[in-house]
Image 1 (cartoon, rainbow, N blue to C red):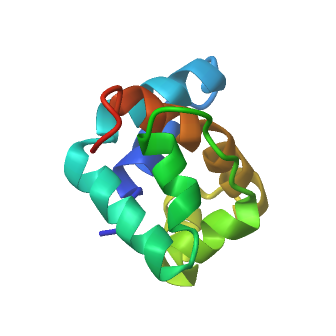
Image 2 (cartoon, rainbow, N blue to C red):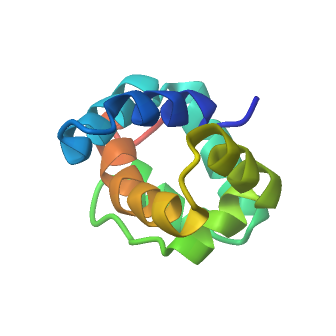
Image 3 (cartoon, rainbow, N blue to C red):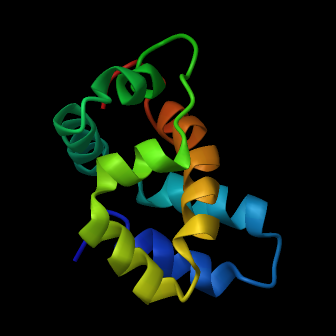
Length: 113
């Protein structure tokens, strides 16, 4: 089971509703300290740790592109997300890239996971 499997389940359930609000709400409920720490570790492995740490830290959240998010998650995780949602990666990754920085930032108001 991948890092964002539960997120994908909930996104699928939110389809047809206000997806923007639902996706943000689901990210908020699923981002726990262990999940955020795992995300930072994966970002470090991909050479993008500074970007993801900007979301955790106090200050400006650096953006992440869908391609960079693919690097962080890895192809197997992306394929699992695609299989779980039925959404193509070129739709799913931009949505996650858009919402994930602010969701992590909101879950880490003290600047730490």
